[in-house]
Amino acid sequence: MKVTLNIKLVNSKFNQAYADKDNEGEETEDNIKYLWEDEFDIKGNVKNFKVINNTTYLLKGLYPNDDEFCFEIPNMTVLECTMDDDSVTLLPFSKKAISKTDKVDSKDGLYFNINLKSIYEIVNPMLGVYIIKEDYPKELLDDVSDEEE
Image (cartoon, rainbow, N blue to C red; front, side):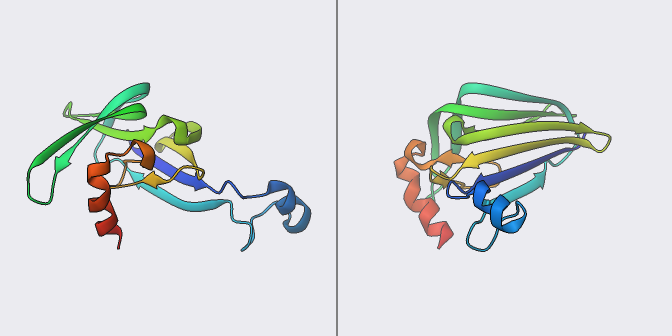
């Protein structure tokens, strides 16, 4: 099946009452509902989609000097996509940053929507990884900051 993810960072300062009163419920330039949005399809055919709550995620990769790293990130919600070839794609989210999720099955596939809270600074080192800054490995923050500049 085709799986599409939609991730939105909800503006904690958005005022729905103001939007309802002055703009027919819609956001305005000075009352923005979402600060950013990512939407992407999981590449390949997903045969099993599972949400794993309250788990630890292993963040693995390479430092700029090609040394390997592996950090345990606690209190995560991980979306697990098992592909046709039995490979597994993991998409981690800090559990306390999630304000709402919504799973929609349709004839076109599965849509999974995630709203994140803007009260937390989110580190997004690559597509599909959303970890709050306070839980992100300090050793890697300089590398992420360099990439964003």
